[in-house]
Image 1 (cartoon, helix red, strand yellow):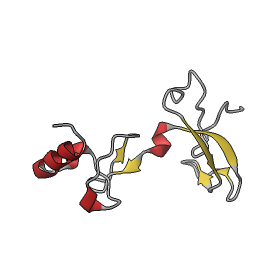
Image 2: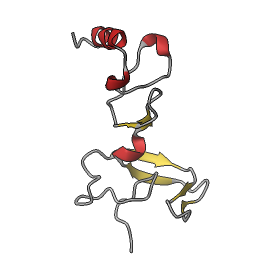
Image 3: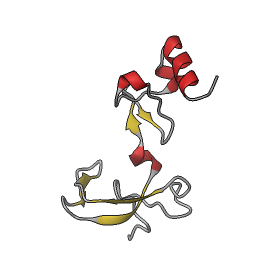
Length: 104
């Protein structure tokens, strides 16, 4: 079965009606990918251009390890590259984050 508009990261369809259309993001990549059964989806160096699904663009929370949905991560200037869920911040960090982002 041919996948229509496959995600450039996981190979699942990003076409309308498959649940990944709304938040898909234009993407181009060439990294190696296997599915959950160790079947090769994309070979190393195999360049593909298209869309990435929201699930593949999630980043892991540096506090709890769970994926953070696209554009919902929090960071503070002193953290550098660290990212976390808002819920994982301490009360002091939440106050500072809200102040830095105008959410007071």
